[in-house]
Image 1 (cartoon, helix red, strand yellow):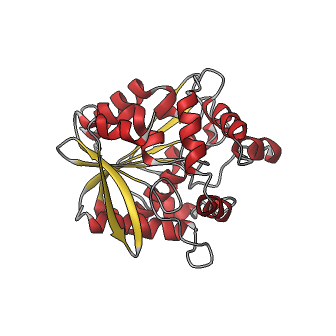
Image 2 (cartoon, rainbow, N blue to C red):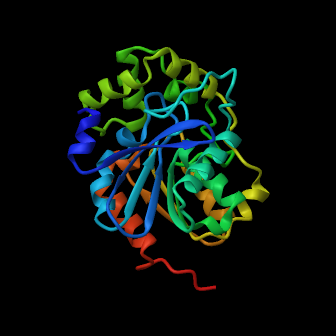
Image 3 (cartoon, helix red, strand yellow):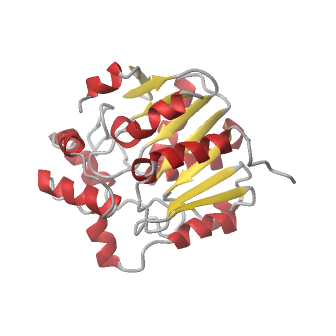
Length: 282
């Protein structure tokens, strides 16, 4: 797999300036705008994280897939000049939507991208029509075993370390694509990418309960039953706090629902976004 694979498949590559950060994104399909926000693991980017879902989503939506600052082909400013914190990611995503003149969108965020999507909804609720949080950060409920948490997310900047990370996040039933291992390893192997990753690692990804509970945007909370990062208690925690929320939990799936079970993920989220079976009654 290569970046050219995405272009050959019909996903057009673009760049846009967002507050001085040259931001890369992919675009495909037509219709209502759907923005997909990737997670924060080493080597993550829009194409690598969402490639299994892009064709399915592009059949129904105008799909827009940015790379966040420090990831993929988006700029990686020096940590001395750019704060790689959650507030900055929220501002960048909102600025990205401004740059593309996107007003009322559907938004799907995975892991750290879920926290970023949630942050935009908290700050600008009218901007997002429907929200999907998948294996999402943002709520301060995590695996109670700190050593296991560290092992699941650690990366030692080696090719084998990337394979171990993907195995931990995808679980034992996830088929490791060696081309994807190489792709992710290459993305995070430059000095700029390493410095950005080191700055991002360990940062706060959570919001106060009151802010989360203030969200009235219709929200689908998706989780893998075996996810050891965004644990099941967090999925239920979102459902407890978000009044207009539904839950969808997949058995035998870990942190990467969109890669482990892409057909089910696309089907259920498309039904939700099209309001086929998920309607707010009050």
